[in-house]
Length: 377
View 1 (cartoon, one colour):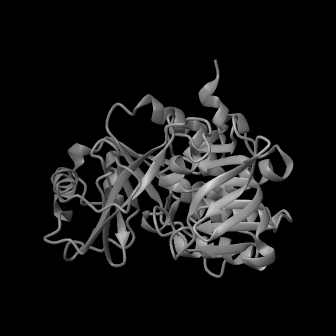
View 2 (cartoon, one colour; view 1 turned 120 degrees about the vertical axis):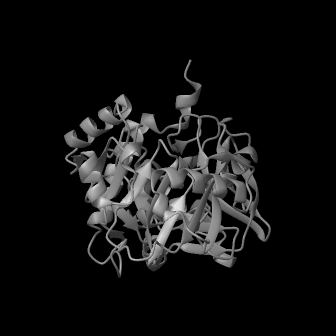
């Protein structure tokens, strides 16, 4: 890499997390940054396989606050950030059964305090949104009219375009094999094509984040990749599904939404997996079809058009790990975003950039995301 062999920051992983951090670091004037990716294209794994939605209702209030911060950016990105809208506000409808779980009541109250627009729907109002739902499977719903589907390609490419324009180096097809430590601090990474110096090494490796941390004996945070399956199929004849919201039913372990003239559906599976390029499981899909037959029988397809799977990576408490490692200086965690990494990337990217550039952030309670939270006595 010639005279580019030393950087202020090396980011391991060019998914949405690494790309957003590169963008926000460059925006703050730190451009001696290298974004490293083992695959030959950015966003190959979890980022490119997500249903990519903004759903600001979340039972975890820390995660919900991150989603609200991300949503503000996605709805109103800075002038010139993207060439096309990154969010299509098609609405999200979260179904529930009586009684509404207290955790959802808490989330609804919190959203109202944060100024997020929402509507509590009766059974009749929920069925007016999606008439094919079985009335006996629904007690009501929460509608988020300003949420919806995210254009992942547009968001990822915008992060990368602005980062590259400001001087960030993006290197694809390079795998990190080791991390150098000098006097107790990260001093660079060892790749399959040579060594690269750096003051900061950021672990944004998604399902492989735990493997990267293990290279240097960083804090033993148990990150668990879990498979999530998605399928697409043709919608029922004679029914206009194009204006339906994105529907989530935790009770049925299903979500579905209009997609390219048909429907997209997920069994909402969370099967623990070793880091890999996962394949969908036909048994999981068959079980999802049985649940769909109870929730919305007319939607059960005769055949499936596409099926795929990706890995979402969870920390022990389900909240992202963002910040410097408590054991190895200069090693920075940007991992464990579970299934909300895309919608929170504008928030988490800015928080991480603040912490690297100035050692603190005014955007969020950094203690809620710090790796040290797992090791308090």
